[in-house]
Image 1: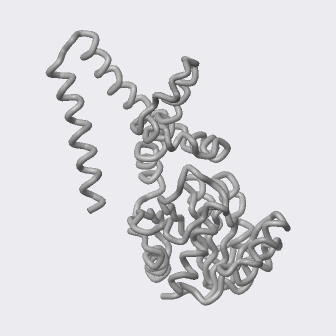
Image 2: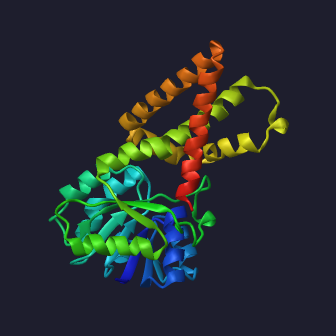
Image 3: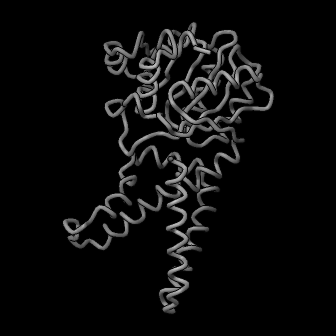
Length: 287
């Protein structure tokens, strides 16, 4: 189904990219944007992917049958009660947060307290760049989106949200909030910490080797350029799962260190081959 009016709460990288994708694909009739900053409201008002922008949350969500919270992980949970209380009868509320347990707990607690229904989403698309200026309409194309639906949500709403994300080009998967947070700790949060740790290590050495860095190092540290304020929130919000993933990584590093120290060539080669096979399996999923 097409939603008639979609409200984007927070026109950052994801929010603005979503609005662009919706407009390009004709996935809704009207797009409304909420921003706290009056200057951002004025900026959005002059763009072709925004039909109306407002700094009043009540006015921004009025009449919308889908509301998408595209703010930070911390603020999403805080916004849910207010947005549900303001939403229209039968409306659907979702989000783009990358840590789901707390957000979904708040969403379930608010069920029945307002006219809208909350279902969590995590479109796994993004960039090391942040902000509306880096938004683009193809950001979601071919990327996975995880939907964390409460058990008491009607199938029709669940299906509508699936259809919505598919309309902007995403491949939708269902998970519980707990499984989602364990998953992203390994496939998203751990890689970011590893990239930042490598950059931190080389910076601490403080030798002027930057001009000698090849593409491999540039690729490996690319995601370390991500917004530090945003990633601080994400990592702390998923602390227990990230710590568990770090412990598993430390175990793998210890293996490689021991093989190298003891000159166990065959074991070291087998360790490296595991990496080769895993990388090839990732490539296969993109075909």
